[in-house]
Length: 272
Ligand code: ADE
Image (cartoon, rainbow, N blue to C red; front, side, top):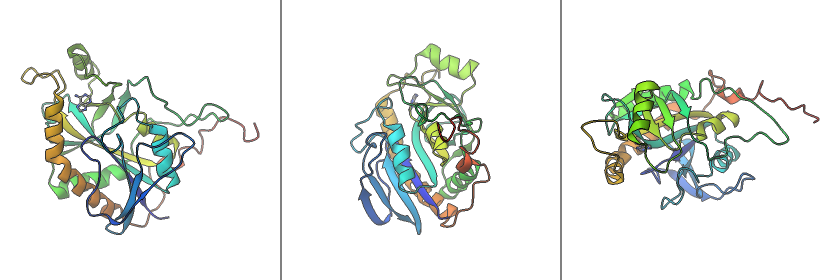
């Protein structure tokens, strides 16, 4: 089997550098129109497909991103793996703006999004007990160290609906009671859909702020977020290229089982 990496770029990452044989492709999906046309090519000889989550020009809010169409389009293009890049706020003093976090778990508090490919005609219940791929996480961690960014392995990501940022009481609840590490608006239902599509998924979240809990920092300010994203986008792009080379062209079955998630998940009888 051959690796093809889907890269979903978040705020501040609307393209990638150094792509060989670049080609923009339009993918039709029964789940709607993806966020944008998809840029395909190779990084270090490895096939990649890049999709800006919010669309170029940032036209989709976290609630209107067509998550199902995006994951389906990457699957239809033959992607085997998905690296999600996104911005997040931090609940920890040791996870500072400019740092990267390889997310290890999620609390999904989104409520206004389509979250499954299944439900009408075919019912399936996949496990998301371990929602990210540890094999991909290893590659992201090594790439982060090689590129020289401050990268943290592991962190629970609170996925909120938005588009408003959290109130102080919410921020304290997520930090002090639920012990979340970071907060963002876009990794769910993306991670769940990737699992349903049997795609390995890793999320690398770039910290842009301390949300609203930190006594020495004011409320979240979008101009500060944009400045932090701008300062770190080159590192994110270099890291993505390094991940591709580390994963390499040849691909075996996933030791975590992400690529076989449906094996025991479908409830509906084949002839129903
Ligand atoms: N994205 C970046 N910072 C964020 C925050 N504090 N809350 C939610 N999403 C974010």
